[in-house]
Length: 411
Image 1: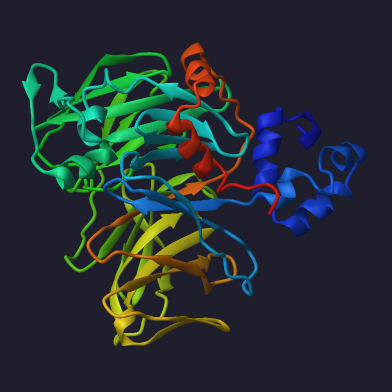
Image 2 (image 1 turned 135 degrees about the horizontal axis):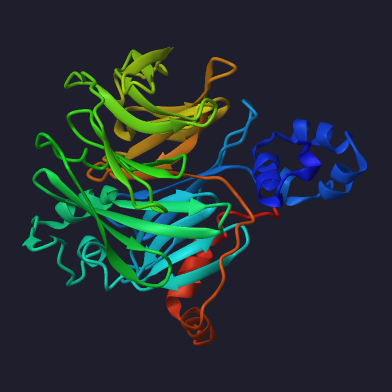
């Protein structure tokens, strides 16, 4: 099959991943691509981005563009909300965001289309965002205490987009001791799947570790290294009995390598980051070791790995501003007393080199979640409820629009 014969959604997905130089070469291959990829097309101006916000709900959402030039600093764009409209992001998949701003939305920031969903009928989501919802497993109830305990369970929410059927689904995994159930929303209503899975031993889901969507299946990592896999289409679940050994001082990231289409596990120390790929026999094999980015001990506070896709690894470090100046290439950021500055570093897996992507503000007492956004033309159709709130000039829509404008095709 030649590229001309590909379904448009697959062709768009390929073109959005290409660098501008590669796009220019593609335009020269034949007349079809010359017309499909114009000089001012969105493929050449919209690049993958990183959204980040406070893990416990935030009044501002930040965004960096994942630019390719090593000489370019990606300035952080910010969308400001107010304290009554705290924002939560629960997932990013195939160009869609699952985002909560005093209401649950599925939105495509690139096409500026969205739909309002009912979250109140979920047994988990209202509890996470601070409502009156009760988090329960069938016939059992759990009430973890505290705001942090609520939002730390956000990793129980999975978001899956099927590009072929143009259907998205939200899956909440409900855990009770060694038994797991699944709550599903197909964009219209919530229901409890008949599928449950029993684990042979008790182990909690890894706190604040987002599920990974790969090959039409959502994967949740447990503390013992095993993985719970659930297919939203077939509603089949299975346990992957993988095992890994992690030292207490190691950082951990569960992700997918798009290049080899494998689940990956990254274990890192301040000196070295090891990348493991999951084989079909459920064993992790060491695929690569990377020397970690250099961090200055005198102003270093903490660091973590925030994103990986097989092409780039993104690391964030937090520095104490009260002890000097943060320097990014030829730019200096003066540090202020009792404040912190986060630096976002990107490792290019092909070039084998680190560079600074940009800086981000980091309150010392909050963790931040990062979501890679890959632009797409995936349609989000409005329903009647969404049309009503748009017509009423609902304040939530203004804040959602501000977040979507962070993906700006005019820049």
